[in-house]
Image (tube, rainbow, N blue to C red; front, side):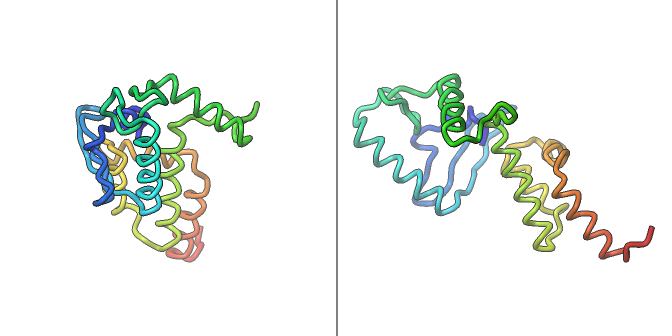
Length: 166
């Protein structure tokens, strides 16, 4: 998800029973449904229970709220991300991760696992593109750039198919 999509999620957009998020009016006015891994459902369920205990009468209908029950703001989310990545030593002078980098990592790791399992990555691009909320797979192919692991796996598959002949 994009940061703004997560911030804008309403309580009704999070269906923990079905394990699905509904992202409404995202980039380019598009909406989509995003299936959740069971571990994500459990984490969101725990968050919701704690949120409701600590803030029984929130001032916002968004799923994620501040400590005083108001909607989150992009700047505050960014600041918290910087603090957390610094605290766990992920952020250094040489490494300055951004929230959006999580989307990139997800896309690349999904494609790496597809390659390793022998799946046809080409056919999975449309699904991944929809999952990420891209208008078409062209936007998803951008994630493939600067991913040496993917290039190595692709080269290995090509070598296996064509026998390593120059």
